[in-house]
Image (cartoon, rainbow, N blue to C red; front, top):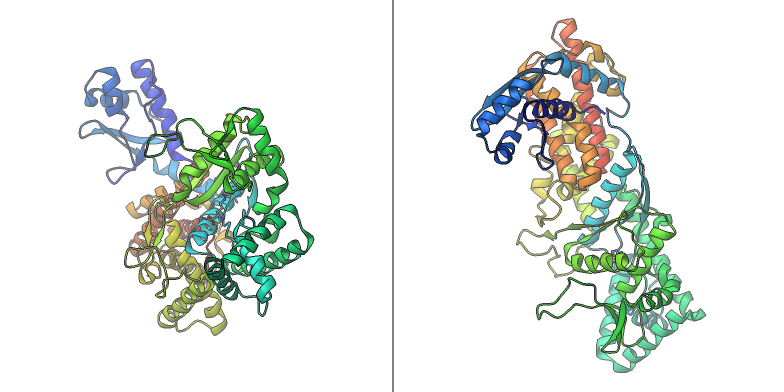
Length: 578
Ligand code: ARG
């Protein structure tokens, strides 16, 4: 693993131990990137409290015990008790040289690879996917790519909503009005869905038949299943188109919808009853996991079987969690679903623990995200107030990207332009989603996400393409072909600043596997591209004398590889021309 912060924290630990005998567990000994030096450590402030000494005194003692060696060039106490650390140029150059020669850019595979189930995308049948499903798809894809890169064995699960009460109404509508086939577009399916809904709401006789149809479906009635199958095929064909267009790693094989768990629902509920976890309440069968109560203070139920005997969303999730652990061998399960379902998942996880399906070492994580808002600050909708069509949204992104490229790069050949516009448009939409802390809502703004400056996909893609073009001019074929790691020298301040950003990449990717916060990777890439721009503006590359030129070319090529690798983990392409 290439990680200066880890190297430094080992030295710091030794120094703290030498100075004070022990290191309290709670104190973080990892320094941070800083404007004042290469890195800054604030541990003396925390240590001062436990040691009952002044922070400056503690900092001075640590500095006195930091052994001189090949890594640290200087350590100095600053301000109230910070420690500023400067690395030796040779150390930075050696680490960068290792990075250049490693295909994985210095990122280790997990020492203990795990089977990780990632539940994401998960749209509902016969309905247009909405922006929330798009967020889930984009975030989930990034996590899948990252965990796979880190060496875990990832099982993708597209938990589509293909079961339950709405299907009674949809199937009954199909019987009465004919199937919504035609071109099979989901627009048509949405119209069909709304017609069925309206019919259901206005005609009690129809509503009655729809309810009976649900029962037929759940019993496996042959004619009903044929109709249901047809609806399923129409939807999967549509989502497959969308996934291909988005370049996400989801295929038809990854679909494991709610219906998949139908055969297990009965026994899951029985098991919960046998274990005295479920009880009858108001005619429904419920689990009351401890620690959950409503506004009135009463325990909150997780309804596993409804009054009418049907199983709902919670029962399916319980069956799914058991299946994923017992049959798929999951040691970690990620649910990439919006914040409104937080309580649902917390209750499901708790129930799975109580039932003994999820032992303490199985990690269950709700990777929650906020809403996508329109410029008006409300949840993104079309003017007509409907959910936005995702395919239309992607088309618009690509159209806008084409317009921008027409202006910015008129010299591009038409075929390149079309291909690159597709990457830029889709990349911009994905990056807008991944670049902000996922737990926050974000405002969907075309101009901002497509801007060539700022923390955006086009900015990073352009930085990458610019390096590729410089390497072409230098006669070096592609970034990964540029060797010469031994040639790297870190002299100018802008070289050092770039070096520190490049060396931060491996730890950032590794941390993403734990934090599941893609915006931190985005931030790292943005800092890298910014440091590169400063380097490029102040350090001539092609015109430099041969030894400096070789070093700067190697640094540039490494920057391009890191940007491309990082963008790839985000699910975004990095064209070599732009
Ligand atoms: N289909 C659900 C929805 O649209 C999301 C499913 C999430 N996954 C799960 N295991 N419940 O809200």
